[in-house]
Length: 460
Image (cartoon, rainbow, N blue to C red; front, top):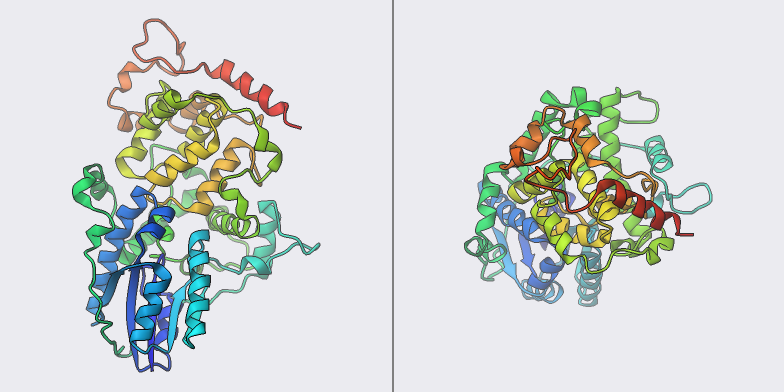
């Protein structure tokens, strides 16, 4: 009896239900990562692919340490797996579901094709803490607001088993397929800009758990307030590891006593609420799949965005808006593949509310440049800030970047770190358009705010 384990965004050994199930009752198992270039190009941005390549190397080494070969094979996702399974007389294929809509389509087709030739297909939802289809309000409809969703989830929460990698000997078989070099996924020689990412990140399952431990030791006790301040490390920085399944929400939440009758302290509760915001993002994507590129609140389909905005969009991307905190944040993104959550909101608000550029343009840029770019989280975040999503910030809530900098970077630690030309910007207490300023904003914050309010209030 042979089984096959298929990886995608679950690049870990522990809490991996597919692995544990694949060796239970089977004599031999093979471990595969199938690289479908078209599929991964449509689901991963450039920064994602950098992380993926590094994470696969780490996973391959982890499996080698267990005496297991990870076959990294190239081909069309469905046909190649069917070919491998058939040729090697595999009885069952196991995988942890990838919740990106493009992967969902492929996995459904794979199930159909395998079952057609009498090969069992078994999948597990390790992305979510619960099944989106099972959570409905009292009217039997999907929740559309986060707070009651979270309250309901907490009331019914039951800790799922955290699987450990099997301790028994795992017998494997060779699939006799040529393994590709991981650099084919992300050719470093053609992407020199990514060299700097090595200074800031180490992908992999082991590093994920180091990051969790560091967060628990250094930042959790002040998380609710500390997470907003830009000059300190107050956040977990776990998002890229979660994005690639090097650690699971299930593993993280198992560290807490989380249930309806337990009162967590405010910092613990707030951190868990962030995990559940991620849950809610996938929940909304499941029930309302159009949100990938259209507003959740469909009345904003006809919002009057600016036309011919390419020049300002490029200045925003390059950190050349003349607004100090915005430019610092965009530089952080370009240098590290990451951006503090507070500045994600500030830069998104500036793009959509001050420059009046469609949120889809910002989402697209973040999707390509953020290491943790995740279709559900990224879309939900942009729609929240721009005012057209579920639980959206009201249209009249517009982040003033100058006031945000004063409050959350009062000593300019963050701005000075990410702006080489910090001294050329006007002090945030001065007139930003003073003729003596070397760097001036590309838009007047007050005038553009009023224009945004006028356009948003016109939506009925």
